[in-house]
Image 1 (cartoon, helix red, strand yellow):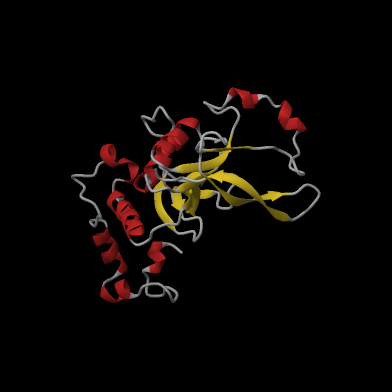
Image 2 (cartoon, rainbow, N blue to C red):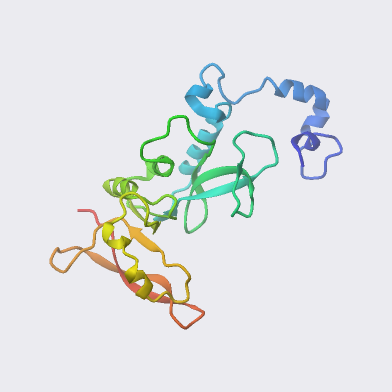
Length: 253
């Protein structure tokens, strides 16, 4: 239901009836045209982008979300669609999503509860993009206030890159995610597909690489490890089994 219908006296239950009792709808929309959550003299398109009229409100939501909730150790970086039929230049179309038309958000949710601690709205191609790419900029912007705290971030192959993982590791933040073989910085040794054809794929049609920040230790480098479990699909079965794998923890010196 549109915002105009929700302000009518005949709107269904659940919508606010305060405005219809105070003034006519036409009067309300006349006043609404002069209301703003930001200072129009300080926030412009050049300084705050296409969402300059609500930039303060978006930042306020992020600040409050981070203030009242401390995420668990594992967080994820993902994209989310907010359905919309409105006419807007920042509305996106994603063919593979359940919600195909709407506003695309970059989000940082807590992996355990699903609580979104940070988000940003994708407004389209920037005029001056960063040399390291859109994914690099968005991940660092979302995770900036959670650096140097030992968090582990999971992401898909749209975000993963060697410069990003090095950047996170330098800030004591681990990361893990699938990657693409044609990605810049991908190890040359792993581009040979012969081992991939011989590998056991457990019925999967496509094998995927998984890269994790950190280094692989040996028995001689006195690295500290802890045993953690990860899920894997055993060949010949149709159920998930837990398999214990050796994983390096972030340990403070």
